[in-house]
Image 1: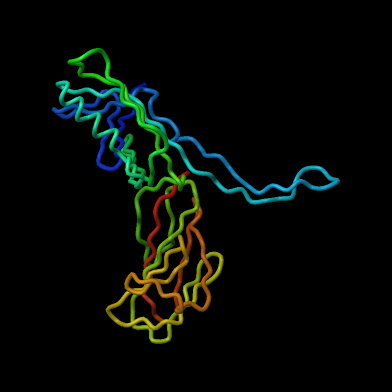
Image 2: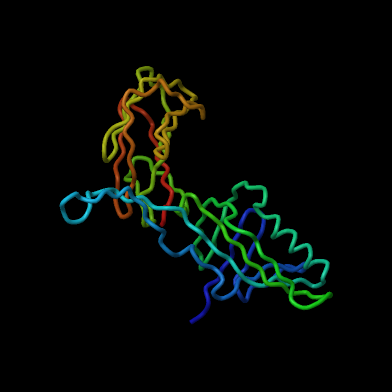
Length: 255
């Protein structure tokens, strides 16, 4: 069985699967078993209350915890000086506490998420002075455990996605709508009382439920604000009143 082609980008640093051709100044190769946590599920948390004088617990919704991804492999460079440059590049990655995009390309599929540094980065040079190889380890923490793929826009046709987890759509509305409008979704409706002028755009992001007018949050423009998802495998019809031009963006969402 052939090994899957693998390339991982974390911020500005690229990690290559075994068998890849490295740049002339060297790079990072991932061990055969050096990429873990990305394909697994994640832990589930819930507030559990035992039934007094009874069996089991009261029912409670479970929520997913964060995801931890670990990378390990070998650094190769044509000279000790360039190996030092690789060391500095790796140990400086996410060291300021900021987050970055992690993107995994494997066998034609590209998925991404956001991550921060989870633990101390390790870089161990092999041998004495003049070495051109080192072993490295990197651990990443994804507060949102979901992985995202391509985004598709739907207009006047049912919305869907290729993922395995409910996706939260983004609605874009245009038109001349002085009295506002209502969007009807699978589990409710979203009624906007803010007028929409020609040449402007309203967006409604189901990740936070906010109405935005030309990108600026409008807290007073919504009378009813239900939120919904596009579940994997579903074909969801979204409609709007008063001749609103409605476009819906859905991103492939995985867990």
